[in-house]
Image (cartoon, rainbow, N blue to C red; front, side, top):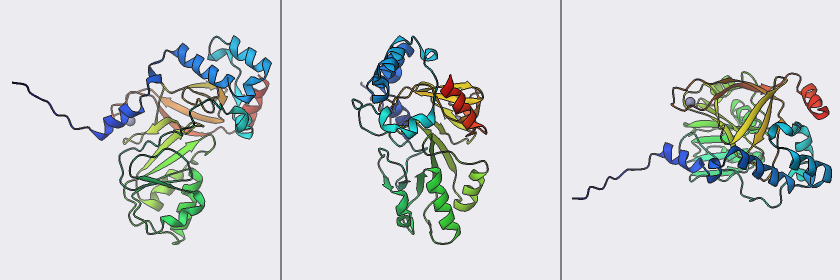
Length: 280
Ligand SMILES: [Zn+2]
């Protein structure tokens, strides 16, 4: 007799599988070469000396650190025209039937919709159960809620904070403010320049799990230097983020053994660090 074991998909591990791209299986050398090739297609690295220096690099450590301002101020110079134009996929901490994304363009899972930051009024009395928004959009939402100009009667699941180099970070103490104002659990995320997920907070709420197979973080002069292996549309290698953080390498009670980033914040003397990186 044949016994057919039927397994119903658990949403949590289905999401885990979806996030694993075939590229994750590439060796570190292959990931490095793939990112270098993507960078060589951008206007910035087309310049001969820069291209030669990039081609001569044997590993990440051979590439000079670049201040993030240089990338953000000249973003078109760092765009790879050959890359897939698909945006990063929004990853929610759990499935939601009514999630609204504010202020960030991402590919959306089923049940999610997006609105522009200047259309926050559309949230008023809406069926929104989960919000995913940039720090600036969340601040505006909270200000309107506290002024009683915006009511979110159905918000009951979570607020996902979409942070990043362009989006900025929550300030110290803002999580408590969000909790008091919106009354739902906060899940912080760190997105790369193409909207790719670099780190995300789990249900234990002890920090953000850093996706070490997706990106490389170095600590230089007290600041974090980022290389995102999946940022092939805006390929940046060794970008001085101006962020600082602590790392916890203990296995999280959620079972995830990826290191946790704690207290991600702007470096006090970010300008000085960026200047030093530019001169290096
Ligand atoms: Zn965890």
